[in-house]
Image (cartoon, rainbow, N blue to C red; front, side):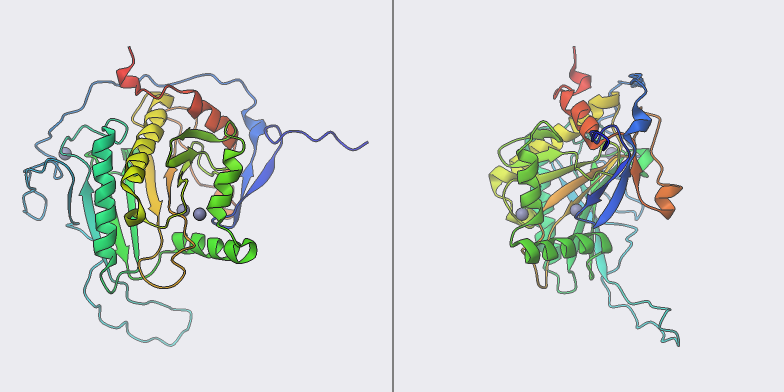
Length: 353
Ligand SMILES: [Zn+2]
Ligand SMILES: [Zn+2]
Ligand SMILES: [Zn+2]
């Protein structure tokens, strides 16, 4: 007698991530114990709107001695401690081994403040204010991407001390590089070969598959964007944000899509904050097409939220052991994570009665 097939939420299995072309081990049987509902009661005192010691607040001095303007909306500047420099570096000394490989890398590092108010987050900002941030992301992508030595613009936000954010002031970083970094390069290669094989876009096809069963993994959607826990998610409450239209980068977004993206970013961060009733830590990053070179049209623009929290505000996931030596692993299925996020109110917990 063949064994009765059991649903994937009961048995160990592995899932394929077609963007990174890697497998993830899913072990849902380890979460069969009932949910304890343990949430850490948040400290809900609103933060300071202005912090005189913050180097990102309006009018304050930065470490280089420069003073920020009295900005009223977004504010971008060159990072005072950049990881990359725009100057042509001297050629590396030659060495005898083909295994000792180094090459020069030029780039620009910028910081973008989302808002003058020190206490805000994407979850607590208004949609028009977030739309102004989206406009700034488009402007920075277009202007930095236009530099002849820049081929890729990576925009990311680290939120929360757990993610290594050194300052709670709402801001992101923009690292523009001469070479396409490994992660987007892998995703670009996967999307290119998918198109060669299927004559269609990987993420357009994936979105269509998810929309066919909107109660499976989708957590929020509007006319322009869909947010969901991807089938192959690594992090417990990981989400991916996809535009419904096939487009490659921030500058390609229409005004309606910029507002739609602002609204969906607010929806995802609000639900995430509501999960444990804390300011939910995460790394948010956008993948967009390279600024120069071939194969511009294969990259389907998207955002990843990688949050580290597991079952409560204190329990975080570490990528150690099997994950360092083998492959990523998760216990909670993406479907369970999506159901929990979807069931939460779309009003922020600080505004609950
Ligand atoms: Zn500040
Ligand atoms: Zn597409
Ligand atoms: Zn990506």
